[in-house]
Length: 94
Image (tube, rainbow, N blue to C red; front, side):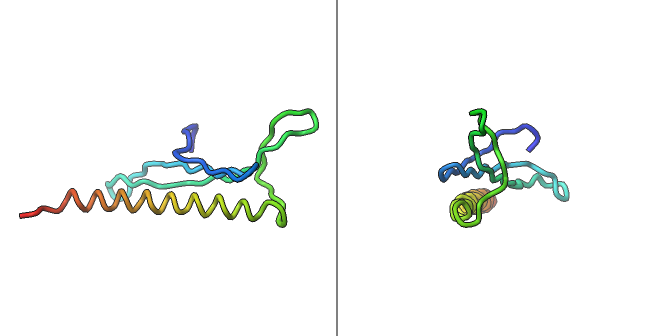
């Protein structure tokens, strides 16, 4: 996540989940890894936009759960597409 942009964002009100994709070498094979950042944006007393990773349990936690679930679904479905495409390339119809 070193300065790269998220590949997907999910939002519920002020709560945001950003999915980042990183390529890593594992035993000589390039592997995609995913990281997730959850944050809340708000305006402070001086009317400046700020961000935090602290959430109200009763008011914001349901939205945090929602964006996390959507982000997880996205990563799982993206990973399954990549795995399916990789297995189809190696098969032959002879």
